[in-house]
Image (cartoon, rainbow, N blue to C red; front, side, top):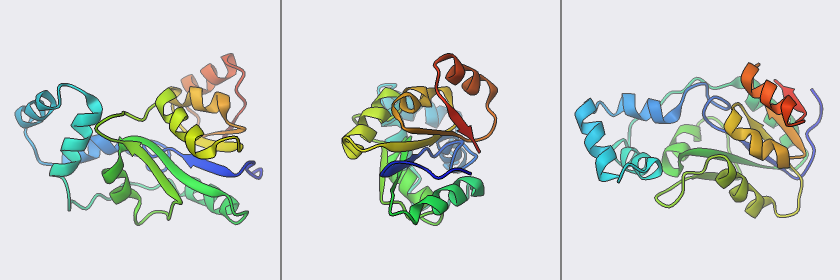
Length: 179
């Protein structure tokens, strides 16, 4: 695998660092009925980011055991030695993201969703740019919502062979490295 460029590596969580969707994991582990989940969603004014925060608050202390994508961890480790700053950049709720990754990897920082923002797509890109400023960065992701970020990254890494994502990246002339 090629060496990563830039001063920063930003890595997505769901489907990238872990194979599962963290929101679905929280829903499953919360043991809430469908009615309770709908009530929680309604009290969140049907805003996904607020729902994530409220669900995360009800799941504190639950031990989540996601399936870690070891290839991504190895890829990051290989390049961390070059004193590159590594951040988790996820649309998952911040506190649940911290809890999920605490035993997986020691990140220099974590970008996550909160009551005010669902950090996905362009919103996640803006958060990344606030941290990286003018420095180059690598982004490791897995889905079409990552296309906006890959367009601005110096190095674009896609986890696994996601045919639609890779096709769309080609259409947009984004050079993806697939791991």
